[in-house]
Structures are given as C-alpha cells and as structure tokens.
Amino acid sequence: MQPLANVTPLKPPPRAGAIEVRNVGQVFRTRSQDVVALEDVSLDIKPGRFVVLVGPSGCGKSTLLMMMAGLRAQTSGTITINGAPIAQPDPNRVGVVFQEASLFPWLTAEDNVEFPLALRGVAKAERRAKAQDALKLVGLEGFGKRHPHELSGGMKQRVSIARGLVQDPPVLLMDEPFAALDEQTRMTMGDELLRIWAATGKTVVFVTHSLTEAVYLADEVIVMSPRPGRIVDQLQVNLPRPRTYEMLSGDAFGALRDRIWRHIRKSA
Amino acid sequence: MSAKTLRHLIVVGLLVLWELLPRAGLIPELFLPSLSSTLLAGWNEAAEYGHALAVTLYEVAVSMAFACGGGILLGAIVGSLPRPRLLIMPMVSSLYAVPLVILYPVFTVWLGIGSESKIAFASIYGFLPTMLATAAGIQTIDPQLLLAARSMGATLSQRLVRVIIPAAIPTVLSGLRIGGALVIVGVVVSEMLISSAGIGYLISRYRTILDSPHVFAGVLLVLFMAIAFNTAIRWVERKAAIWQTGTRAGQGAADEVGSGTMQPAT
Image (tube, rainbow over all chains, first blue to last red; front, side, top):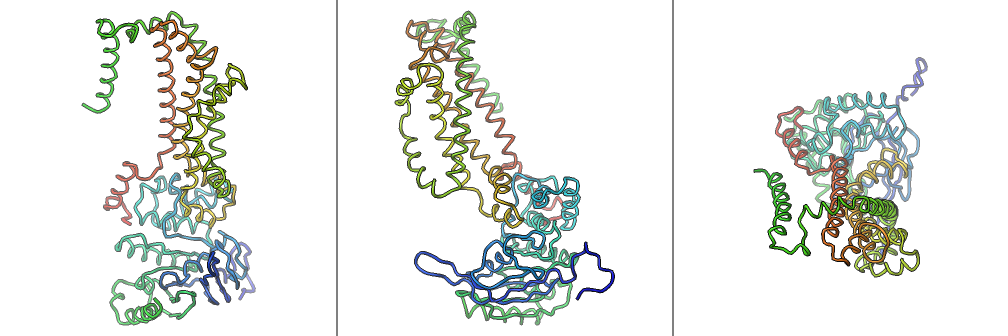
C-alpha cells in the first residue's frame, strides 16, 4: 500500500512494524531428552498494534519474544519484521526492554540511552540530542545525569524504554518489563506506556504474567499453553481508549480476564 | 570525637611510645631503637637507602606490570571461556596454597642473584590472586547486561570493551590490591633471602651486624611503600566504584526519589 505521490524515501514505509511469525518451533536439546518449547506457532501482528502474550510459566512466551528480537534462533519456521527475516538483533527494526532494567550501572541515564547509538558510531552531539528527546518522551527530562542506582525502579524502566526507543525502531518488544515493580508503580507505568505508545505509534509486543495488565494494555491478547508452547486463543480487546482505572471493574473487562484465566487454569 | 581523629591519635600515640619506651630503657635499644635514632640512621645513610629504594621500586614496578598484566589477561581468558577454566582453574587454585617462596632458590640458580630472579619470583607471587579475582569478576557479570548489549547490536569486541571490562573493574581492582601487596612482599622477601641490593638486602645485612636503627630504617621504608601503594589503589577504587550499586549515597538518592520529593514519582 505505497502511496503513489509524495514518497519521501527517508520516512519508513507505511507498513513498517508488521511482524509475521510462520510455523515457528523451538526445541531445546538436553543431555537426556529434547524439550519442545514451542510448536508450530503462527502469528500476524499488524503495524501499530499493542499485542500482549500471556500464559503459564514455561509456555515459551519469553522464548518467542527473544526470537522476534533475533537474540535466539528458532529450530524451525520463519519470523519476519517489516517483511524481512530477523536472524540477529537489528536495533533499527526492534527495540527490546527486559524485565530487569538491565541498565549499565557505570553509565548515567543519558549515556545508557545513548549506548545503542554509540555502538553505531553516531556523533556525540546527535547522540545527546536523541537521548534527550527519548528521555523527555518517557517523562525523565532533567534526570539524564543520574546513575541507575540513583533512580527508583519505575524510573529505571523508563530509562530502559527510552533506550529501546532511541533509534526509533518500528517495533518495541517488552519482556515482563514491570514484573519487578510494586503494584502502584506498575499501574502508573502501564498508563505511561500507553501514552508513549499512542504518541509514537510503535508496534508493541508485551509479555506478562498479569492478566489484568494484559487486558488493560492490549489491543489483542495471545494466550499460550505450556509444553509444548502453542497458541490456544487470540482475544480482541475492544475496550475504548484511553483505558481508565474504572474499566477494571467493568463487566467487559471481567469477561475477557475470565476467558484468559480459564485457558490458563486448564493448562497449568 | 570522630573515628578518623581517633585513628590518627592512635597512630600518634604509637609513634610517641616508639620514641619514649626505648629512651626510658623499658625496651633495650637492640630490640627496638627509638624513632629518632631510627630516622637519624636512615638520614645518615640516605644515599645508601636511596639507592636501595630505587632498586626495590624498580623490581616492584616491573613485577607489578607482569603480575597485573598477565593476571588480568589470563584471568579474562579463563573467566570467559569454560574449557580453559576447566583445565587451568583447579591447578591454579591448588598452586595458590603452595608457599611459592620455596621456588626462589631455583630462580636464583636460573637467573642469578640480581633483579631478574626477584622480578620472576614476585611476578608469579602476585600473578595468582590477580588472575583468580579477574576470572571471578568476569564470571559473575550479570548475563542480562550482555543480553541487553546484544539486543542493541553490540558485536563481540564491543561487548568486551563496553560491557565486560567496565563490569569487571571492581573485582579486578580488589584482585590488584591483593596481587600488588604480594608483589611488594615477594620483592622484599627475595631480597632478604639471596641478594646483593635493595631494601630487603639492607635490612638483612644490618641485621647480621646487629645494627637495629639501620634495620628499622629499612623497615620504615618498606612500610611507607606499602602504605603508598594502598593509598593509590584506594584512590583508583574510589574513582572506579562511584557507580557501584548499594552505596549509601545511591540508596539515599533512590529513597528520596521514591518518596515523591522528586517528580515523576515512578
């Protein structure tokens, strides 16, 4: 769907951020046996969607995310992002946010955000400007000179998100990013993430254990079952946006959460 | 009174006792010459001590370069690759328990009684703890940091330079502290055993003629050398460890932020 006129080659194509997972399988070989972590997983994620992966421990949702990030090779099948296969980490297409903020403790917040740019030899001034923009986007303007140990858990994850976004990739992959945070911070960070997502239009794939968090954030929830990891359900979450705290106690919200829970109880 | 002033008072007190006890005749001058006579002995033979200090410092510097350079290099290899680790670590660990000074006479046979044998001995002596600490430091790097770097497209050499080395610095420094101290011990001890120059040699020679003030002047010099080394390492550690988590300053700042005195609160 390329528009015929006004094509500016510097802008990403309009379909940037599409993820296609085709018949992906993952087998871990141990000394005694082969463990099938993922079996025949296929998934289509449209650009700009907020997709959440849920499932009991060991269902391979993090493994799937790591494969989308190019951090782990699948045993079979293909994964494409922007229409091209992903075989190794490509920060221009994919930003990753991990559960632990995994910031480099010896660098300041802004140096952490600049890190991926520094790897590619971007000039200092440009790096600094981009890092400032990213920190501003995540609400951390003025905190750039601090080291990670001088930041709270939520702020560290904000820096981590800024680092994932600094190269402006169309896709942001998040592996249980708020799991280590306390309940209140987690709620606030959810709202913050939705704000950032709305402002940037990224495709987000988000892994979580929390069903409430899943329904609250998602356009679409993918439910997976363990051993071997498979997709057992795909739910469209048609709650209006912006999402509000009041929706959590609504019937529509409860029905979606119950449906996910029934799947998980069955397989766990 | 602060702990620091108290510490200084204790040191001053000891120095005063060192002066007074021998003078009052409570301790024979042969066992412990007074501080002033020790300093005077050193001052009178300043040229001799200066020359000896130069020899010792030279040996220490060269050994330190070998011990630390080799220790860090081999420690990095052993720490990051499992196969060499399996081969080398058990050997190194048991070697660590052997009193290596038994090798020194062999070194004098091979290398003579000049500086070379001291450098060889002290290098090996200081090498082991440096290598063990470096290996441990590299093994204990948070794998999450390496994964994050990889997700940002860091190549192997970029991961080494930008992640592994900075992450390992604190543990490596604590290895250097022990390794460096052992290098000084190694040099002085080997000079005392079989030698023709250096502070250890002077101490040992004056001892045989029962000249206590001159012995103690040498001891003082070694003491100053060790203190200077310790101060230098501490300074480097402070410079390098600013970022280390769990420091009280860092904790305080995090609490301050967490309690909502700063925005944003999360």
